[in-house]
Length: 105
Picture 1 (cartoon, helix red, strand yellow):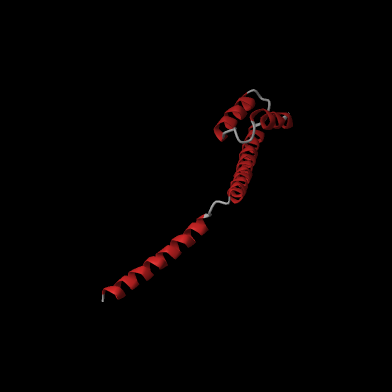
Picture 2 (cartoon, rainbow, N blue to C red):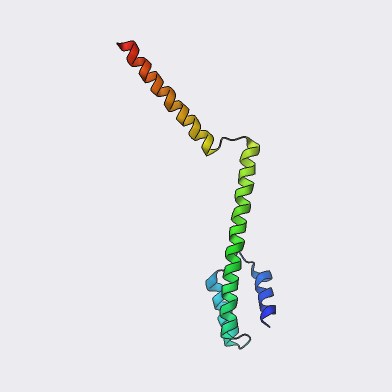
């Protein structure tokens, strides 16, 4: 019975859309109806929460990969590129300030 409930949860609700609170509520209903035991319900909520977190982390990694690839395809400067440009500009500004002081003397 629990396996059928698990499959229904995973397929019907989707791992990323189920909140822990909603899962607990649904499991509590099944426990009250006697369809699963309290222990099975608690274990299922833990398993569901873990799988949901794993799916969220995997989704985040995929998004980061897609964004990184898009930036590379668009040939946009990265944060590191911009920091290097800023560093170089600051060096140029210091050199110009130094040359101004030399010409004023």
